[in-house]
Image (cartoon, rainbow over all chains, first blue to last red; front, top):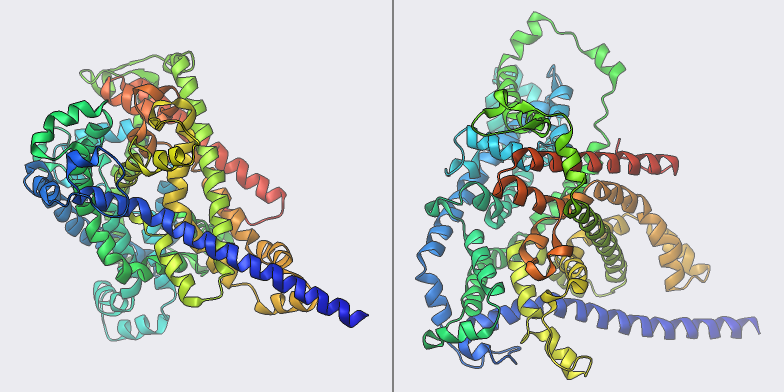
Length: 302
Length: 325
């Protein structure tokens, strides 16, 4: 009797298990479809004739193939300038911010440094309290940072969170390395550059990637501080202008007027979106482990 | 939620006063020895004072009738009248409501979906399948809000997939413009957040689940616990501290989550529900040039954020859970 009950129970759970597994798999497939489909649809719009797209009914494959949308994007001066500035700020911004955060992290990770706790606290506070949009805006204006490339580089150079992530990682490096270098007469900068930094490559990679993605994706600083300088626009800000031109176009009639060119604001925006996404999406599979590593490093207890 | 992790870093921050007094003696010898570090850190402090602390002095503007011509030092002080003006403005009251409502909806929605997704993904047996789904799941986190709102706009447009499916399954007679109706806006914003962040937010829960002792599951299986029982009695309690600390971190951020999506997706037809405090500050402070009013609104936002963090922290303390500070 007992045995039968157990057997019965086992059978029951395994059946419900099977149902669960099937449902769970369906759920995961649905999740992947919902995540990827909108991106795929934008890709289809980007390769489809703009006027034709207005008819709707486009799903997985373009109906009227064209490269005109991309061609239009690549001939738009503002987008090209935006791309140039974005690449420039991503490269310089990432390098300077990484160097600054790493050096600061090095200082506060020195066990014997007199003010390491005060200096840490000084920066941790900035994570929670800030002056807000208007005082910041006026400050940058006063410092002559508005309408200048430097507004992308200087104000965001230190991020307390990135500094803490690097500091946590440096905390895990044995003191003996540093001590023996010190006995050999190495100065602080030598220890930082020659001894500590080579060991911190993984955490540097992670932090650099986060900073780089932040630069690549930012648009608000371009809009707020450099609105007047068309030569300092960024890719995302130009994309945002395209988006609002699409959203404000109340009817498709307006777009129909452009039908002679076979491109519409929607189709051009789709092409620009794809081009903007391209660097992130194509590098993503190779770099994603570093992104995840950042989360886990940050969580490591000292 | 990428900053969520800082919660764990931060828990170590409280300075151990007793220990500090013991180890530290500021002597000439030490100062001389650390002159490089001291010099470099003074540069960082200078930078921090200028870019992080100086804007706080700008809060004084909220108590002034700030005029750019007269500048910061010559503008007239007017006490709290800008705050009075702020709270007698119906628009500002509505803006507070919008910010809190969308913040709360987004918080709940992204929390639940991330936890559910992490638990369900953990139940997938195939390691490869798990890896593929997870990798795809956090891709949207790295796309900008501009791109995400653009994609969403395509999907929800008159010729987009959502209208198409709804019409095809006879749930709608004809396509509608979702962005024209205030009743849909909060839902769209919540969906956008869920779409972008579920996979990313789930990472931390997945790693917390990985940290649960496998022998607990074995013991539960022997005791006859089914799948649901194991999730309820082992997985959920196992990730409870993580859930609480992330919840704490994010309650303080509720008001910060109200800018980009709302700014990008909002339009004239839905502005009664789409405008948030940050948009209000941008509109009245920067565009209209009323710096004092904008600063006052910004201060109000900061104060509410700090109160929310402290209250959440106290609640966790009372419940005997992990806290931030």
